[in-house]
Length: 412
Image 1 (cartoon, rainbow, N blue to C red):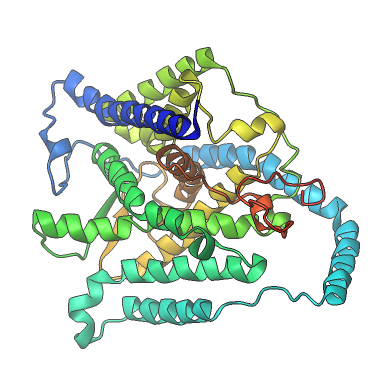
Image 2 (cartoon, rainbow, N blue to C red):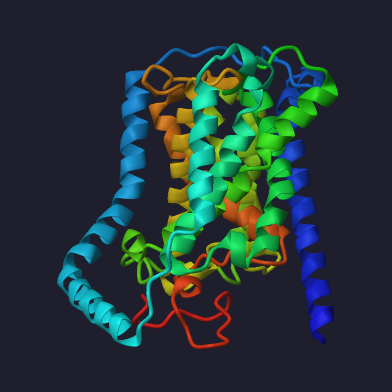
């Protein structure tokens, strides 16, 4: 088979998986209200309005504590692994760092400098941040539109940080890939807006009354910045190996060839999506988990690689990086949202009583699987793949393909 044929086959296979995943994610939640005899119109209207189908649920300390313990239990092995590895190798790292610095000095090679466009992005971001949180009269017509320019500044700035660390970044060396993330991101987040019709965990205020086209345009622009922000942040994190130390040789999970497991996973995810339409007040966390499970299950059934493929070799670095990246972006999303004129607020069952900015404190945990979904969707829908592994950022031999070269033992 020629390279073109293989590429066409791969694109066709991805297209089928995307179509199947979309069909499941869109139709299964609708089955819930349909089985109960409720009208589906409130879930499909545009611009989206409140369906009034979710009964507010008060804060619950037992549920808050139980979910907190579950989240800590899931994250503790990763955090302990990274901390232990860094602690055991600190003296070795210091020795290697001194030797590397001495080698650099002898070769006359200087580390990459923070680029001028990074300083410009920092100044831009600070200015837009200031304008987003103030209420000048002359700024009133533009006040609701600060989100997109703010996040464009962030995306450029985080790429500059990566460039200043490694001499390479997505913006400069993979610009086509970065640009392709914007339209994909808009479609990606619109899907979550659709799922929110069932659970009604967030809603928007301060944007005024909008027509259908105004709503579509003004919402799509900020939605388009989600994937570029998360994956650019993930690339920056992978340039800091201490953040994922030890996760290149961690728990081994081999999912390849597990079609039976794929079917079991798909049935569980499908039941969760159906349940979102039936019991939204109790199954609302599945909004952030079920789409990832559907994509992974279909890839296993169709014998395609998943974002978990590297865990067969015990390598969790990319997964850890995108999860942390989404959490970092989540912090800025919620912080910048807090004093903005046009912003979102939350109505999350059981955990709404303890908040950080407008977001319930435990809600930040949802950004971790969301980061995995960002990676899964980008790798599934785009021919080019996320190249944020350690190998991409380490200096290699002339002519080395950084996106394909495997990391050496020293790099790990």
